[in-house]
Amino acid sequence: MNIAVIGAQWGDEGKGKIVDLLTRHVSVVARYQGGHNAGHTVNVGDAQFILHLLPSGILHPDVRCVIGNGVVVDPDALFAEIDTLAGQGIDVGDRLLISDKAHVILPYHRELEVLAEARRGDRKIGTTSRGIGPSYEDKVARRGIRIADLGDGSEGGPLAAAIRENVSARNRAVGGAEADWRVVHAEARAVWDRLARWVGDASLFLARAMEEGACVLFEGAQGTMLDIDHGTYPFVTSSNGTVGGICTGLGVGPRAIGGVLGIVKAYTTRVGEGPLPTELHGSMGDQLRESGREYGASTGRPRRCGWYDAVVVRYAVRVNGLDAVAVTKLDVLDALDEIPICTGYRYNGELLTEFPSNAAVLAACEPVYETLPGWSSPTAGVRRYEDLPPEARTYLDRIEAVSGVPIAIVSTGADRAETIVVRDGFIDRWRADAGVPVS
Ligand code: GDP
Ligand code: IMO
Ligand code: MG
Image (cartoon, rainbow, N blue to C red):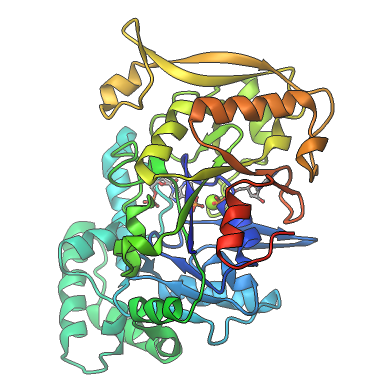
């Protein structure tokens, strides 16, 4: 039984840690969307790994990793990541497969993104400046360059023609010193020698692996509220991080997705611009940011912090069909005397219990809170549910009830070991179905 791991808030929920934890039970980990805008942190003992484009499963030596057609790949960023991992003792070797249909990010995509953000002025999105959006724009406009195209070595072939056209559009848009398409073309062709060994048909590979009994983990990037269709548009990324992205971004059928695990923080964060209904602006926001070390794993930007928002998580449960959630960073709340949970929004004197699609309605919403007591002793590093203080268990019970989804995992620290797998819950059932003995 394959499993999907999906961010149920605005990204950075701790997906990397949970993917790493579950990778012990699978043989393939596949990314289906996004690019190196993602930053997935995995802490193992004293070592810290931050994965951007490579699936987090790459840290496990027997696991094969797939970058699907739905991902946008910056070859320079990919090579840099592979080299960084090699420096940390992780050899990618032949364990990586990149879909020949994935689209490429070239330097002009990054330039166009900087320009687009500047033009938006105070309506800017606060993107990661990685060229993600412009690469997806080219894909949808049917002028994009795919990984397989980089293998076209001919001087006047389709790759040269596409780059010539795209660079000329870049020159018209950016102004100033013109980029020379021949240089861009030569650089794009030059990456092929190193890249070629990893390129292939990812959909076919997955189909064959599944036929042979491989268990696959689908690793989502970003989060439900950053999804291009279901997120807080236009303050979103340019791909579908929600569950549907798995089928389109890897070329697998819906029945390949055996179970869907959402990842939620015990509170809420967001990087970049856009609505965040439970945002804390004062010292409490600063306290959460400092105790949770809420600074972006990709860009280092401070994350905006707020209370747990059950309206958002209920929405994520609906659009992804979540079977269960993993609640991370419970320990970050350890020092608080009381902890509010947002259970609904007040709009024009009415109580809203569903996340509104309309940005103007959302902007006028006030969160409705119920407040729970903090806990008497710390949860940091606790590994057994029964060892959690009673108030922490009450907090989790309440999150479960108001979010309408069972909790399968509780994370009490960044390390792999600082985790509670809830007994007889979704993960144990999944492990049993996947043929992994449940200890
Ligand atoms: P991702 O993008 O969803 O993989 O999440 P990030 O790696 O961007 O951000 C999550 C951060 O929280 C990382 O620094 C993790 O090491 C850290 N983290 C994950 N789980 C826990 C936890 O339970 N407690 C604490 N204190 N930190 C955690
Ligand atoms: P992981 O996988 C948090 C945000 C950016 C910006 C918006 C659009 O680590 O959870 P983009 O560069 O994608 O066009 O930026 O999306 N964003 C993320 N925020 N975690 C991420 O990934 C993100 N990837 C993009 O901050 O607001
Ligand atoms: Mg992240």
